[in-house]
Image 1 (cartoon, rainbow, N blue to C red):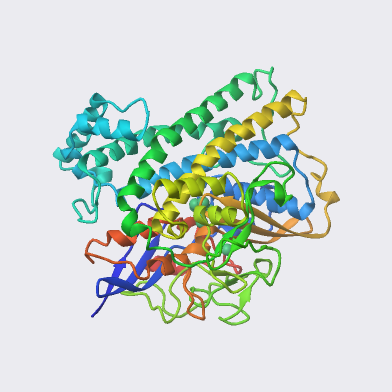
Image 2: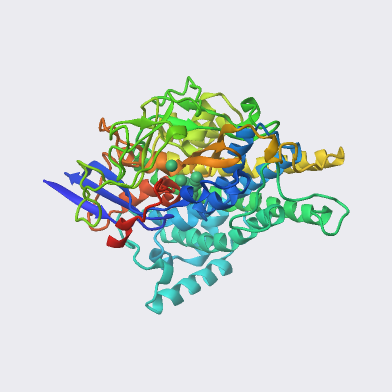
Length: 573
Ligand code: NFE
Ligand code: MG
């Protein structure tokens, strides 16, 4: 017998996501992912000065804060042929690295951990035993009996008050939780530690970008000035502060995040390294330029595509090509002037809201028809997974170090084959490995910046094309970046010095989109097929796989209404 489960909203994510699955014989046979929210960011920037667009599009999301702003200034620089000074590229790299470390740690503990960690079970832990468990995992300085007893007392207070607060509504006691009470207590303690830690690491954004979330950017460079001896500039004291935050971040990632990740991987690997793989194609635009931006060969994260999990070959990707990246709306609540089956390159992209068929509310999604506000992007007609796993897979296939060795060593530690990477657990592990690398890269970039300053180069902005009088009448540009959740592209058309069209294709658009017209599933949907669900009333297994992607629906659904019409569907929620 087939059974339909609806989870709406999926919690512990950014934004509004609905997932419906069909279950037969205890396994998921079909899955549907729906973005149930609409936004209007792109319409706001039409007709504006392209130099100020970063400030608007940055607000698409407060989680991957800064990444859309960076992508936007890159798009405008690409359109106008602006080269950014070396110091500015280095500071941008520090901004990305900070975002990665913050976003990935917050995802692991605050969004994903409770799919694997049972908070209530941690109350049964023996603090002395817990200290021993923790000491075996890591030299972290807080691994003492007294520390864990204190944490346990805090949790007990919560539970005894009958108000679990942020811990309410978990599937506590579910048989799919496999950690011991002591292991659970270690993870819960680090959940609380990570809350404290995350507010420190983002201070790096405040030094170079003025604030967090939504730090400042500027077309042509970075809006900060470094002068080692000037009290009002970013001076030696501020740089020493940044270095201290980077060192602390690295310690936390190495001594807390990674040991906890390996613990969870060890306990859950039997089942979770075999399921949740989903689509078998991986796209990365690449990022962390170590010399001039645009010279892809110098990126720490390489660009490319892996098809069919074949790690012996990397395919080139050209986001500018109308033959490669296209967006479809066949199962999305939009219409298209060329018809519902048309695929448009984002330079030609349109987002029409005059669809009059059935929209929410509903009992079940009408999956034969349109069922999401997310469009469906394809590369050469194929679905792509983007994100940490895609980046690590592309790097592995490209033979890039240190990624390749780190993957090999991690799998060896866990006694897992290379194919284990293509799973729910592999996706979660790839994010951790990437964070470890980012912590190192941030320090490398910091040293590079100091060296450049010592040579006397502290230029931050290239003003050469700052005057719109020097711009061509028409210009088109693509900004590419790797947001924490994956490949991100902004497409800008500038006409008579103003934005004529602006399109964004975000990571979660790739991953969370509905199937295409041919019925080929995108990443979330594909990854759920075959997953066992032990109890349809507590579908913990669905959360594990969906959370492994770290969904962000605000990024994925950012449509604009070309006619400026009111989006009345929102009223019906
Ligand atoms: Ni809002 Fe985002 C990231 C981007 S995902 S979190 O990372 O771009 O669609
Ligand atoms: Mg878009």
